[in-house]
Image (cartoon, rainbow, N blue to C red; front, side, top):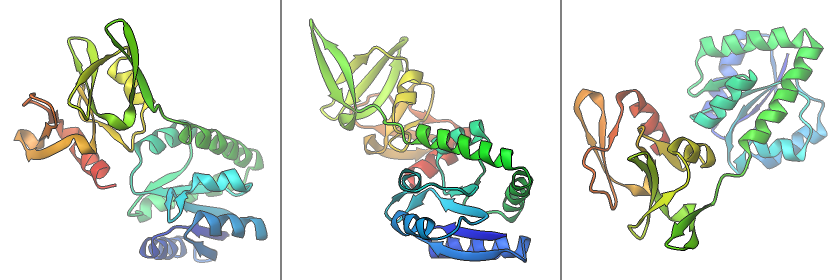
Length: 253
């Protein structure tokens, strides 16, 4: 089995190489690449490997940019530090992914799935088709502005100026950097689907926040967190216990 690793963190790449060799002693590592540019050049100049391991975030952009520039003919297993939107898409389309740091058992399961797919050419083609559809979904453009009503007039609010969204009395509001709140003609669930998940995080049923909106994070009862948000008088903005680790990972991107 020939393997190509596309990963911009040298330690992560070396760890992945070691784990692959421990699970597949006959595997041959063809190369380790750290950028979109180098990956595109390599794939254009070399026969396709049997399997590619690909980090999502590379030194010069996201790895999905590779697929825009060159035809990828190999099955791909993605690795990622954390990307909720990507994970959702991969689960729906049955694309393999592994969270960092790479766990040996998870890698073994992914390789087992790869071997199963590799025996059936139609399955491999189906996986690559799903991968293409996944990439299109992951690279879709997110909403950049919302239309609001001010008296008898319509105005637009740029997403870049929005600190957070919140729900109150079955109405959705956005709070902007000028400390004003505006009513939106969307539910909070609809807003969440329209936004870039790297920029906004759903901390609870009531709040969807951007990192710059957070003034303070306070440890709270039952392993929860309490947030102090700019321009908010709400003293009960809580990150639920089951979302705390996910929230920390999002902040630490």
